[in-house]
Length: 279
Image 1 (cartoon, rainbow, N blue to C red):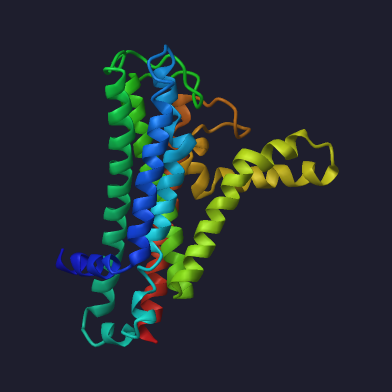
Image 2: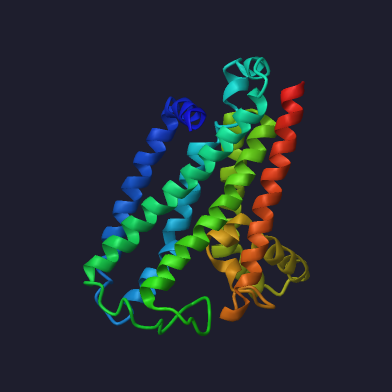
């Protein structure tokens, strides 16, 4: 735990992270104030379900990129990388501390955003119909859960997708050893996938050009298995065509995939870290 706190103190000196957190709070306040006007209707819980799809997933990705991009680059940029190898268990202890901090940070971000959005919006409608079964859902045909339970489960799904993204951020940082490049590549990758989801996909499907017909299935496949697809909850509805309403009994398939992807990312990260520590 002490080593994790030591890593946290390194990140605390990263001023850009504090600025990013402040911007996230301002954006969250703005979105919550905008949503408050729509709550109170019969579709209130349906609107609350869409928070991740509309802005929580994006805010989570923003905070992860700002907060973790420096984690694997700090020693190289501060010229202290050689000190790690002077201790017997230096490389392994440092790797455990960095991965432990990244998981705790990811959990803290999701819990904070989930508590703010779900707690405040549910309180605004007085938790009315919180324990009634889900009536309408954009992702699945039938959900055998109550409204509040399904919303909480959505944030669990978001946490898994966020860990998937965390693995990608740490891998890029371990390879590049440059904070600015890590932020640009990871943030740009998420933004490109987000643009595909909201803009490019509709343009491709409506276009009759042959090139669009060829590229669209490839782009849809990449988005489905990307960290953005899981953080936006789109990839959890396991269907033949992405965007169709999924079957609840198949939800274990994407969960199994994202868990396997997370384990694979951190295993590769450990191999890269060990090789870098030896050189």
